[in-house]
Length: 448
Image 1 (cartoon, rainbow, N blue to C red):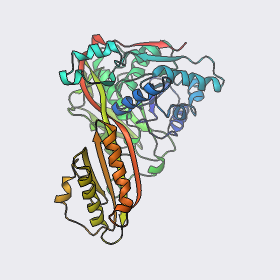
Image 2 (image 1 turned 180 degrees about the vertical axis):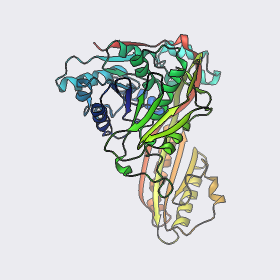
Image 3 (image 1 turned 60 degrees about the vertical axis):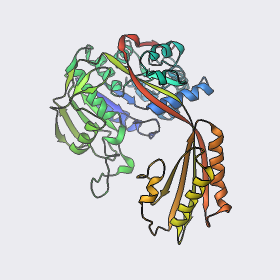
Image 4 (image 1 turned 90 degrees about the horizontal axis):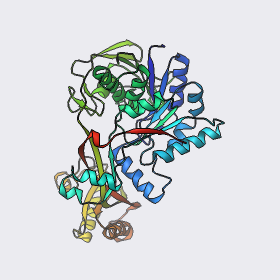
């Protein structure tokens, strides 16, 4: 295994399971050879919420589950030479790195080499000035909550080459968490396009965690998955030419087969011949998948083309307030009572804000934001219906009024309503643009 780099992914989003990493680490240790542990924990909305958190608490703004994810495996990783790479730094990579240092100190490790990748955050005045030249005029004048550019793998690779044991990033492209370690281990250049393209697709298969090992794939009776309650998380075994095998942690549930890999390979790819990333344009139009054995799928034939001249930036703006209220109706005529409750709310609010109604159990996923689908959906005989009312407005006051109206349904009718819950949250809107990559260089620095 010495000529193979194993990269295991222990999280596919910020709220993923916190017990996934240990089986991956133990598997890589038992199989021997170099390994890297990554966590992919950052989405656009996650990052914007992290920026809001940092506004309230300068020491916050990183992934809330960071400690629960890292503490169980940090000592094992450092003792066995398994670097950890993750974007759990979110809006505050420095604070995340400092927390990891404290965890290491608690475990008696006083010399952990922790690197921070910098350059993605354009939320300051310099970044806002830069972005105004690439945003539409209407967007350029709005209040920016967060602005981050998708960095590539180069700074991650540089940090690992310099001896980093943990690399903390903010916004980098998800596959770059895999490409960076591969670049560092095999000493690839930034223009080894085919190799970068292959590692990018390995990272793409890893980035959503258990999606490729049967979790998100499972559909009872159609796509059965063994022991999905204990689904294992994936490992990519990458060769020097970038070709790779997808497998999973030992002694775990789930499955890795041609079906799971094909689904995840095509996931979110708008053009299979041109998957744009900061590192490379990956091309899977001639890719081939073969089963090497149980839970071992080889992927070959991926190509790479020169990377784009621009980087994607995502900007989040303050989007007002969202109120959500729910109330349940059960028994005979339950659906009719829930429909009447919706009409009461609609009339009482009198177009004070944009509303949406859902009859959970009858009509919700397929409804539209104005609730107009009610009129097109024939009543059913459902005896168990929960009405959801949602409203948005730039100001909080009308949203608070809406929530009071939902609460008032308890006694103001219709009959038999119960189990009211309401919540109000700050809303965010986002847009994306492209900026020349030379304007947003990335670097790394070690935590002192």
